[in-house]
Image (cartoon, rainbow, N blue to C red; front, side, top):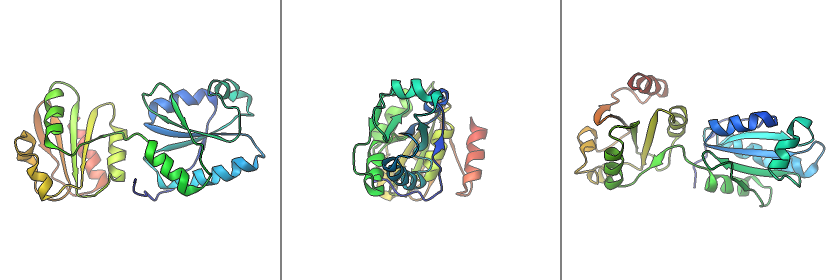
Length: 228
């Protein structure tokens, strides 16, 4: 299950013309279709607000007022026939959506969102996956490997992957330890790896560059910016 990421996130009201733009920018977004003065809408919106506050950098949250004339076409195209309707959209899935049909509680909605959201990075667990990625991308986009001792992807993993998605293939290995290190024997990448701790390694056209600074988010982002 996804780790709770405690950080305030609002549900941003948008109008129809913004919908396509938001879909291009975000890997996963939840959109709340509702009308004013609707008691059922208020109950589900409260649960959604709680979920969004705990999924910052994972899911982006928006609301659409279907009584606003600017949203008539969008609500029709999205087949909104009852209120409230909550949909989840994943980037590059041709605007296909998943509709929430469960009980409007924070716990149920969180489990649903965590199950269906799309990670903006590749998550690997074996050296064969790493070897395939490196060989297959030798002349393509840079690859950023993040080896993390955390058992689940961190906020930083999501932020980096979403910010640089057009310039990098971000690969995350979670639960990294001494045992995991030995699984990478036979891959050139291992020469730049240590047996413990957070490590960030960039592969640029077959060349390896390792981040050597502190585990500071701002410094890591500056380093990535210089590499690309």
